[in-house]
Length: 611
Picture (cartoon, rainbow, N blue to C red):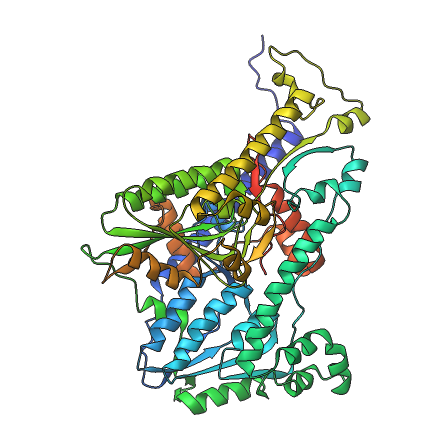
């Protein structure tokens, strides 16, 4: 037998070299990232000083969310889209509140063109704080180069709004298209087994139809008309216009544009939606004339720097109202993010509030279209356990609190909602895809044995049995009955009254108050005040309750804040930014990720998109 070592082949040799090169590149990239982070941490600029007659600048670049969560690991931080470039709504509100009481700050400057994630409810919430700022005798000035309708809605609360001479404001109205996949699924021979209760529960329609049903159209049209009326009324009131004038701008902009010989900025100015036209430099000089200069820099401070100089503090003996945020699709477990509300994590947070003697009441901030019915019930049960200790619970609805989002709130001591909150959607559905015909078309067939009927009866690759269908439909009907009962008991309504407004119907916050699903109109602050009143608190503070971060997550959050670097987007994210028409497809695909409940029972409103 020869002891000669076989000679390494050409492909093996080059494969080994390529692997070494790949490892070198990855390690070098990580080292470079680490050096950039270290440099950012060591070279952080000194905090600015706030002089007299300063301006507070709210000019954010990013997306508004209710709560920021850390990346799941280092790969998400470096390479994947994570909760970076996100801005908490509460930070914007808090900065305005602080500035209103700060004698050094006399002017608020709004530039919201680069801020996404604004909805009608968030715009109105921020607008209420702007109005309170103005009530102290201080000034608010807004500037835009190109505003969407919710950016403009927020800006309309200012004393003055200025527009770039080549800029524009778009009031496009509410609504839009949903994608329907029935024909595609038929061509792919994918059969979607759908189980539902409620005439208006339209969440499953994209998988069973090619167009919106009449009942779904009626429900959606009523919703968008009601919210749009609130939006146009608010703009009209803020600008001293009639609602008809605002509607004319939205509905007949082509006519206005023709009258202005194609000049969109002039058409906007002529419609009195803005107070004047100004280039960026002209607006800058206008602000400088008001607040002065520090060398060549305007006398003022960015709202995020301002918040950093005014950190939250809670004394060990101070009583507090806890706030827990439910954001995104409700799932039983998994990593929480801006798009996923993990019942496992939320239950832990509720227990933290229950066991913390300083926390005397809880506000549940809900911004969710729902999700798993079972996961929603887990959250509600834990809230009931907290209430049993004598601590009141108040729900505060944000942009969307529908279906499972309402399920978890129905037993609260009180419910607050914004006028344009999307809520209701009291209904249940189940969905189970089956690809047996798709596989059959490829010559693939399923067969096997079972010790009990359901071992193969629930198969996605074989035929769904009649027994399985019956079980799923009965489960859906039982879940719907439970949903109705918990609303009846939680809201003190009769079953007849609940049935009349249930069946998956969706309501605005304003209408929800009129029909008994909501107690009061208001935001997080009003809900917190009411929770403190229910708990009999005189001197109290608000405390955000969040799951404690492990050391790795804590470091990643600090690195994100220190560097301000945005992780590399994946290719589909880039496509949807560059090609906006892909956005509905991305949204529809993203919604499918919420269908992971092993029970296949969902309390979710897929049509409740942010408005």
